[in-house]
Image 1 (tube, rainbow, N blue to C red):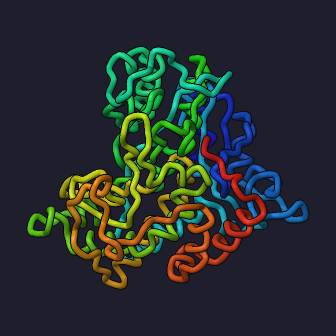
Image 2: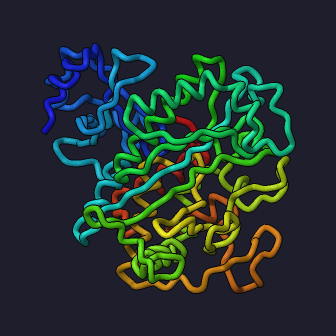
Length: 421
């Protein structure tokens, strides 16, 4: 195991943020001085669980956050401070409802079957005026602003700083663009093991908000921060591997994908209504899904439980012969629960040899499926939560402690999930 104290000493860090993401996607942290890191790395930094969005009470013992040294990242905008993801324990026992733990459990199940899960995420975000909540750039007014070069370059100082930061962190950023809504942007970095991607996704939300604030902007990952504009997605690209072999790739398969990939796809389709409770976890999520009236003329979000080839109107897209793209998730999705839920659904598809049925090449924006031929996605958070509660298979895979805690917390605090960092 990496000696965390020595590692931060070698990097000249003065402090370390012991961080975790709670059930509603809020990042919590304690700032630990370098001199105390060795002790707290062994014993854990203490948190009152009830003070975060966890299903605990003021009477429960401390939640102790134990750092995962492999997740250590230096804050590019504050280079004497490091960030480390933590695993939560209570009285020496892992806290099963903790989102990072839920993902780790799913990855362990995949590993037991001989699979490693790799993924990449596309977190869209808005740059907003911190005073009035409108688009921060008053010149960003095109009716179809996607890929607008001038609007992108007006934000060059911030975008460049984000790209440079990701390069320093070793993420492999490879492109940035202005997205489909005025004031909306996306940066892409290289896919990785799912736990690494989830840690980076969590860190990216903090990094984007911190650097945007430095440049006089606010950041929103909310699924629908401005009613008439396209919402924020968090599309997930995914594949299963065995060593260095991509198990989703089969040159002889339809669209170059293997039987295993189609079984995984079958699981995504079968559990889609329940998945929405985690991939689309706030009321605003359902103002993004299946909405056709946006300023640009497109929503880029699915309405139906369907899949297609290289076709962005379906819930699942097959962009090439290496992966699947799930277009369902939005910016409010918890970085860890997103990966965990998708993997759980896909593994069930493999275990039960689920057939996704025929591919659709239709433009579902203009040519929706015939009545009865495809199921609609949930149209509200209440509908998604009901589907989640009724999906016994997905609940069993994700674990009773997590499902009970998540449903109880949502029931007590409807609409309180966080879309930001």
